[in-house]
Length: 383
Image (cartoon, rainbow, N blue to C red; front, top):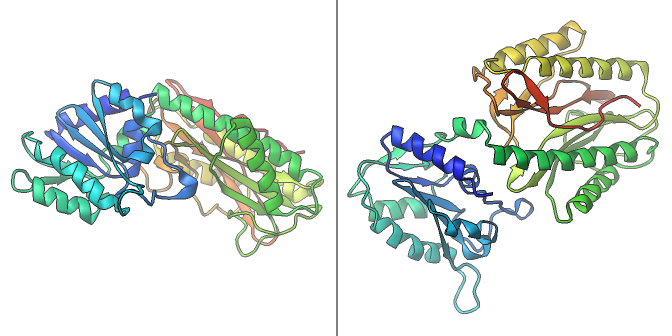
């Protein structure tokens, strides 16, 4: 898994734009270009001088990371189009100061650069340290051109390698949902956090390693907002529903999926809403095909819920997924993105009655040449 297709597509884009040198500083760009998988649960590496970086020059990529982070991408150093540049972070031989070590590693790389034209920079994610390095080493020779979000359209269309990583993640959330259903059905008296613990344990046991887990585990009577949120100590009662929305992060890629479960026999109102969400999700999936426009899908699914007599949900109808949990194309009212094959999209209609009950169902779909393939396999049916 070396992400060579992503780098080739980036090279072609930069050549078309007349950019022969570029600095990628956005963590999503770095993950997409290299397969770098940061430790999400632990946050930024506190030994590093900056987040991982990618320097591009005339078709060649150099990944710059603190040496303790290089393990998952060490193979890149063996590839023709890529080098791996590391610098010391943790040490007992000298004071820990990642910024100094990063500067020492980057200055020779930047100073030997002699490509023509402007240098592309993801400015929004460039630290003060990196700005100063660019000023001191390159600004006198080349202007800087912002390239923020240039990779976003490329990231929306997944490679075969990326699709396999996503499938692996969706398989984990399917396991999590099976655990959620077991924990909640007949589970009156448990708390939200008890259910979440069972979900997370099942996922990590199946993966054989630590797996970061988001998003929601919310009992229906939670007030004032029962749409989503971290699990807490609210007790699940006999006729409560629980919305469980799960994202795992593995190989640097995210999954997402949602279902609504019931502690006992659902009420007539809960059944009606759940069935409507099932129908709305099926309808949304039927709209997915190349050439479909994001905002039109959103409008149609919202109207479906309106026609069924429910208030329009206040969140997106769907979104892309990849190196982050929310990517383009966003299925929202303003978005004119046109769907294309190999995009992966989550669809999640719902309706909510804060303090009482609610429901949301979510599937991931792969846009195919003539429609959609459902990638998530979790059981979303009523008990």
